[in-house]
Image 1 (cartoon, rainbow, N blue to C red):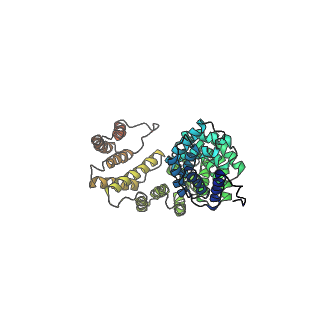
Image 2: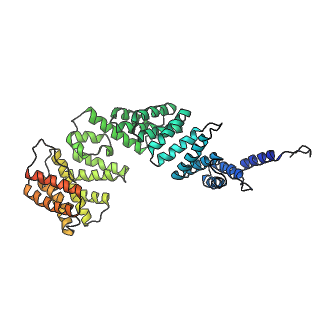
Image 3: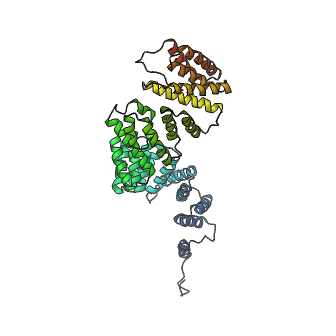
Length: 423
């Protein structure tokens, strides 16, 4: 304070100095006024203490309405976004922004407020709702990396791939981050632009060779590229392998040679890298069936499904799994091993022995097996049993599928007609 008693500061100046000193010292306010609660909430926000910032900003909103001071609702929403309270955050941000714009404030609306609202809506999977706020933020800050990446991801979710690619290209011009390369490459893969995806992912992998996701996506891109560049060479065997689970490019060479055992040797390496990948483990079970290791295939299937050994649920599911492989063999015009029929029939029969009413879909699997083995009379018998149960359980989809099978039993399709798929 000044030494001259006649040169006193007015109350507003004292209040200003006190508040700013408090901001520096980060001390809590000594009053419960709106201004103090709001100011200290901002102090805590700046310090990254969002949990306590929310308390003070909520206190401030109880003391003033949105029409009087919309900024406090905006900052409360921004705080809640960082606490992953997306619904509350979106509500407060939208409320504050709309009122701020309605009042035609002399201060311009911040692009980062709009971006935060867009991010809330993105987290809530309201991509169409997020897009206009992304656009406005981008128009105000066209070179801000955070705003660009949120906009690009929103466009990707909306499948506006051309626009998303443009924004990702701008991002990469700002900073060639391997994460952005990977995200753009995934868009290329969705559009089956394998060459572009392979080039980007090769660059990304060189930057972060230890990133397992980028390595996995690169494997997918390489496989898709080979499929596109050499149509027909991989052949029908490719139907047994999900593109998005391919462990490495050497698998493609083995597929071209129909070297199932060679592929089998590589698969455990993949499962070591991705032990939680149930789909990859399911494909491993398929490979084991292709090479005649049925007991090992069953063990892998058990691990994938988590079903109890000896249960009707397991036997029905495993029977359906083997039936699907039989269907794939037939569809690919490959000879079906007799042992594959035997193991499929055994699993289905076990399910029906346990509870024919609960596991009636095993009857449908048996009908498909009999159909593909050429036993049309047996196929009709099991299809009839399955149809009766489907009607009892009011499963309209299965009624239609089984009826289609029965019609094929009475008038088998020509060789050039499309077959039917297993359930």
